[in-house]
Image 1 (cartoon, rainbow, N blue to C red):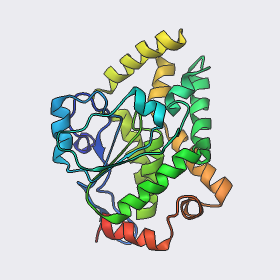
Image 2: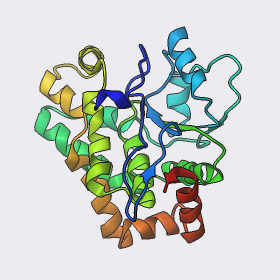
Image 3: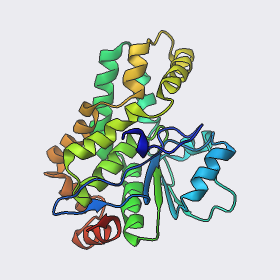
Image 4: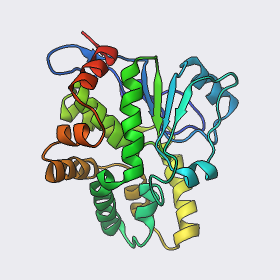
Length: 259
């Protein structure tokens, strides 16, 4: 059942449908409309063919300029969807790479990830593109893809917030977030991460890399708790910072929930 959510790709990590969950009051989030992934810079022709079949109307790229320049996403031939991004930086580094800096063991890396998630609501650039993410989906133009570098941290927060708005139970939203750890070819990705991080940071062990490149309930809960601590609730943050007011909530539900 877990793998049924994942699209078959060779070089696009963590590519999956995040619809299909039951919502409060009845109904389910539509499938075939909402997709999430890591970047598409290394996508091969077969991967691009898979993307093309989704007929994406919006691609929301949560990365900043420097990340996009370093890993420029490939698009299928004839791609005509709108690509949304923030005109600046949403992070100095992707959160998982930022956590690697200064982490000497798995325990310190875990704390760094928790701290980084807790600070995600402070990122002005990230808030800007999240605002546009919700506005785009409320238009109901068709299928969309939201992604960052690894498709797990900034993307995880974005998807969790949308699930919240649509009425997905927090436990189901958490289960979707944790699916990153079951992504196809995840072990190969971790091995590659060990090689890259070992070259850059030196002396980093497998346990630490797994903490950095995976997800944990404590990470997402840190972001959720941060919203409550600083805004009173996720709903207040959504309305005050991201502009997701009552009319937009209704529009999102009308477009993305099957009764």
